[in-house]
Image (cartoon, rainbow, N blue to C red; front, side, top):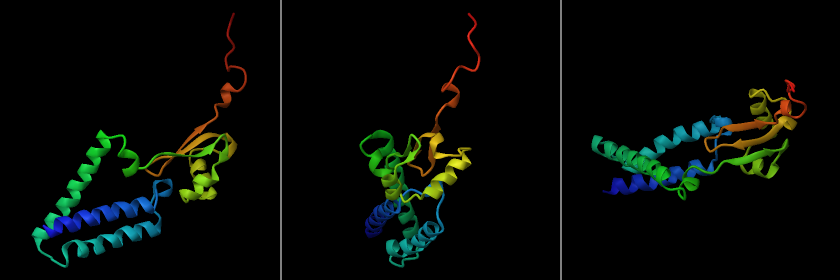
Length: 159
């Protein structure tokens, strides 16, 4: 039973660490984050099983992690109050062509990373961005101004 308690504690700790390290910029892991997560896997095994290398302990520890993952998924699907805590909230990072520097700093996104993501979407200038949202999965959604609607309609109305 001690392994169940240890696995539950470590699961909560790993969840906390991944939330603190932040969303992966542009939906990709940095080298540091990748190393952190790979190293955590080995360190967690030792902490959960107390160097117990039995198959039973390994199955029990993995089972607890799996059940907790399923439980969090179930809670996310059922409760709106839990969702912002477990998965985060989308953040507006550009509004009417102006990057929101406070949000970019808190999410640890540089202007260069933001512009790179915009270029990947075919956006040349910040002025073209109506709104940009950092999604909970780390990707950035861009919504641009519709320049076709700024002037006259493309096809004049007959009449």
